[in-house]
Length: 369
View 1 (cartoon, helix red, strand yellow):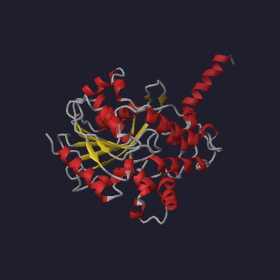
View 2 (tube, rainbow, N blue to C red):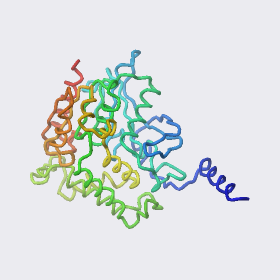
View 3 (cartoon, rainbow, N blue to C red):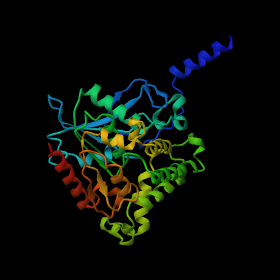
View 4 (cartoon, rainbow, N blue to C red):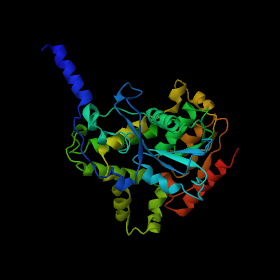
């Protein structure tokens, strides 16, 4: 057998044989996140040229799509999150009223629910998973929205943090489709501060002694790295006043240590490090202006939607000034400011006044013509 034949056999083996290099993590199960559906994207080509075979876009929906197919809202998901975290923000009688709107929540490629390092077998499993961009994620979502549901008009796209980066991508990439956009705590292009932060996020995991270049042998092997990531988020995800004023006591935590352990470390401990790194890399490289040749001004001018960015005035992850600066040339734009000691995490409505403020903004935006 010559070398060419051996190479062909190897290629065919990789293409048609399940190479079980993944490590099952029970956290990414319907019993934890709630049931979801999957749309098969086929062999999905990423912007870097890599192809994810049989790529799955996981999603959930709420409400009913009307016969005109013009009552859809796309609600995108944040870094480390899934539909489980955003589902409580929509429902009957809420601003995003599921008696009126058909809400699609597409999970991120890389979040452990859609195709991800943790659920991929073969040459792209675990630490070998390719880089995925926010542009890739939104292209996958577009295929879901248009091919699965036949939708050509979206009443609103909204999402928080990395979900907000996807909102900007939607508004720039598909300007004739998006009528309204409400990115929450996010900028059109990731700023230098985000680059530094996401480097710390990824390195906190890579430096775990059990990380092994992303090929750990046990799903919860990287506890030290995940705890360090939680502590990093405790520093920048809420405001300084949250700690100085001990506002965490409002939620029943008995001490600062209790708050840090149960909120920040507890959030990340069940998760897969490769999934988190995949999402963090996409967050770091998010740039909707790539659709206009890297021209930020042209990207803003390309947006036709009513753009209402929601800004948290005490946010230390996505600074208010960066968001405002990147919206100066959007034709129909209203900056909506929400003060909260929760800073970036105000979206979750852990203080009721934060949730009420965001609800009002959504309601007012959806009432515009």
